[in-house]
Amino acid sequence: MEEFNYPFKYPNYYKGPGIPIPGEKKIPKAFTPVTINNLKLKNRVVVSPMCQYSCSNNSGLMNDWHLVHYSTFAKGGASLIIFESTAVQKEGRISFADAGIWNDSQIAPMKRICDLIHTFDSYVGMQLAHAGRKASTIPPFLEGSRNSIMPNDPSGNGWQVFGPSPIAYSDYMMVPKEMTKKDIKDTIEAFRQSTIRCIECGFDFIEIHCAHGYLLNQFLSPTSNKRTDEYGGSFENRIRIVLEIIDAVRSVWSRDKALGVRLSCVEWTDDGWNMDETIKFTKVLRELGTIDLIDCSSGGNNHNQKIKVCPMYQVPFADSVKKTLNEKYEKSNVNNKIKVATVGLINHGEEIESILQEDRADIVMCARSFLRNPLFVCQVARELDVEIDHQLQYQRGRESDDRNKQHHNKSSESTTK
Ligand SMILES: Cc1cc2nc3c(=O)[nH]c(=O)nc-3n(C[C@H](O)[C@H](O)[C@H](O)COP(=O)(O)O)c2cc1C
Image (cartoon, rainbow, N blue to C red; front, side):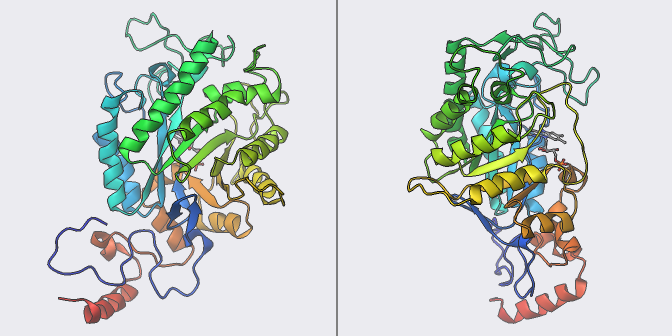
């Protein structure tokens, strides 16, 4: 935590927001540390990436909105906060208001937020993304939401979009231009360049966005990828671009830094990417040995998807991936320590705890719960009946006032004046 130069020390019981106070008898698994490669997260409740569509003037620059939005989660004790889908190329934005990391001017405003988050002892992650055929749309909370903005739109807020094949996502979205091999090469290089910028910003974690129907998901899926070259057709060809991007990112993001992928484990259609392919891909990633986290989401690549939504509906995907990774695997050079994250309609402490206790995932990511309550981690602690530290200035807000008093008494004995 940032030292405020008080002339007295912090109470010695104080460990920082999101950490159980000493003396708690039974610590729920949600509040035990977990490691992703070199990162030791202080708890297992992570802020899932959430687009904010809040950058001005087509700049991709983060601003005060992002500073307040992200740092509040850190103040509330989230162990890792993953930034929104951030475009590695300008044409890879979902909308004109997306955040970007395609040029150096975008480093300083992001670094400012990373630095602030670090003062709360939270880690900060970047989700590197390219929207592919789902780029150039109207942000979801504005009129006309999600429709394409055509390149010739008088507003100047549209552009030609790219994808593996010239197949539009839906009737109200643009037909993408099929990427040439040079376009593919340039995009891979853009992921590498963006990673270098991530290092300058001070990110602790990078997640490569391969989910929700964006560019890399479009390459993975046989419904959106009809290419006949080495980037389409067979499973091995469809995953090629992702593996090349992982290699490009890793060429600059050293092996001891945490790197993950977010997958749409199923497409929710009969003919799309399915769980068998996710398991096959998990095995490829295990063999590759350079990925530390598989973040299991689903859907978003098919306008005709039929999703059966219910609480924790995506947990079975993480469970299967985790079971695959837990299988005995006799290879000396492989990374057997890949962690698994689950996400999607997990809104209560009991749900989070049951997932972790049953070893169905190592980490639980939550999105909308953090929008409803940016101090969601404190809510989870209350629901699981464990006392965690709040940010010092907010200690008076803790519900268990008596225990609070006790700790004040104890600390006054041991605090150096
Ligand atoms: C406002 C909003 C923006 C989102 N933006 C992203 C994003 O940038 N990248 C991503 O992978 N998922 C994104 N998602 C999906 C969430 O990360 C999460 O997977 C999904 O909301 C399900 O989790 P939840 O039920 O806890 O909200 C977004 C969700 C919301 C609500």
